[in-house]
Amino acid sequence: MTRIRRHFDRELILLFVLSAFVLAPLTSPGYFFDAHDADHSVFFLVEFDKAIRDGALWPRWGPDHALGYGYPLWLLYAPLAYYVAEGFHLLGLGFTAAVKGAWALGLLFGGWGMFLLLRRWFGRGPAGRAAALVGGLLYVYAPYHLLNITVRAAFAEFSALAWFPWVLLAFDRTVSPGDADRPWRAVALAALAYGGLLLTHPGTILLFTPLLLVWLLFAWLRRGLLEGWPWAELGRCALRVAAGGLLAVGLAAIFLLPMLLEQRYILQEQWVQGSYGYRGHFVYLSQLLDPFWGYGFSDDLTGPNDGLSFQLGIVGVVLALTAAVVGLRRGRPQRGVTGFFLAATLASLAMMLPLAQPLWDAVGPAALIQFPWRLLGIASLGLAILGGAAVASLLWPVADAPNTTVVHNTQAPGATILALTAVLASLAFTLPQYTDIEPIDESALSIIRFETTYPEMIGRTVFTEEPFTDTPLVAQYLAGQPLEKVVTLAGDAEVSDIDVRGASVRAQVDAAGPATVLFRTYDFPGWRATIDGQRVPHRTQPPYGLIALDVPAGQHQVAIRHGTTPVRTAGALISALSLAAAAVLFFWPLRRARSGGTPSRR
Image 1 (cartoon, rainbow, N blue to C red):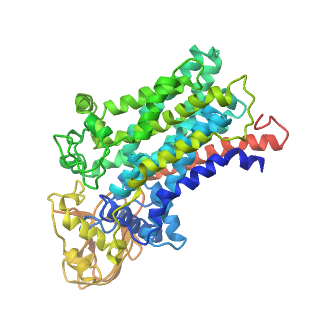
Image 2 (tube, rainbow, N blue to C red):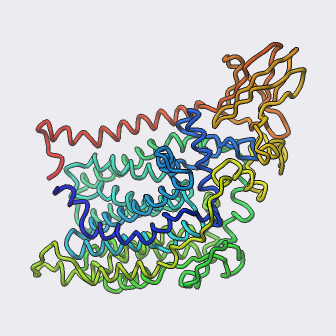
């Protein structure tokens, strides 16, 4: 019971209760398919589920994209959030309900992480718990969080934001003297948290990793210069941080290695140019304070009249200013934390402004972020931390001063009022534009509807010699007919019994003589062709880069299956070894404690 109470204070329970106002809209029988990427959030899961059910336990291929030719979606798109949604689906929820369940879990997970992070930094006394409650709710109800749900429906990016406080919490344990008796267990937790982020959203990695590295350097220097740590201990601290980071990259190698080495087979220019180019998506200072809330797009490429909100939230801003005035005074708790995240928040805001464009131009990978306003995720993190710092600083002299007698199970009424204020200030932003859920929304036909409406979103590979806006499969999708994904390309042959699955296509071919069949599927590394179960070579057929297979005379079973490559195999092996290493680091202190060795905690 004591261990449970260490992790679930009454303030944490209150945080979960007050989060109900943002969770409630997710319990509606409808969805919000008018949100920007709402269709994606569901039909990606449809594709993911197809691959899982076809035995591709780590999906790479989306069989219905590119108007039925398929696309290596999960090579570029980190899949962890969809594993969570797939878990809900396998438990019996429909596709849309499963995604809503994952939205709700992400909200609670992020708020919980922020609560634990602030409670760690500001203590378990009344001031620290009050700071954790207010900061956690500021993070749950951050306008950018709610924008990502009700306006953008940016499922993977939203899920990545939930990892931010957990990564900071885990790495803080690797550099804290309070955890010196179980340092390698802290390394394992840091690797798992950062590895989870790496497997959730690549674009967010580019935003959060610089903040994490600068924070760790700041913490390391502070302990060396201000706290007088000996060089030997500083070296061990740096080793633990490096081990956690490297192990996290190893855990995510199953995704990162193929993404980095095989993305050259994909035409990526379409995802970083035009409306996805960062130059048209800078934010004006007035927009950060404008209470406007819209459901449109970032569509004003030269001014501040966009159709969606980039506001920071009035409660977070006021508390951040309070932290700047009160929290930086001598004697206030975690003054260094307050100063760092005040500077980090201001820097993230500055990088969203048009004046920062030369810096974006100078950093090539910045184009992959697409939208500078994605830095609102970093700003939301900073404002939540600063809000907690403001509460702790205001209550510290009263509740936790050294000369004050405190009963630690008391609460701070003022903090509860602030918490309610944070909720009420964002309550209007929690309501989506509800739509009914139609059968098409939870089927592959949703993908065809989307790509025929927005043909510029049809993905292509380097083997696609010319763009297209239609395929022979589209009419079959629209008519609800079986997909003829295998046809005769040359020779006298009849194709029958076509079986199209999530990661494979099979058919029977009766050939009067040597013939060639065409699989209406993009060729891409990982496809393996077989005839009667024996692997055979195939070739890429222009102009669209489809799979062609020569078949001898007679009756044969032909098939293609999307599987592994040497790069993917290496990534999977590295991830497996890294997971085993993390498990050893995590459980070894417990084993030593049970066997009478050094205790796992003081």
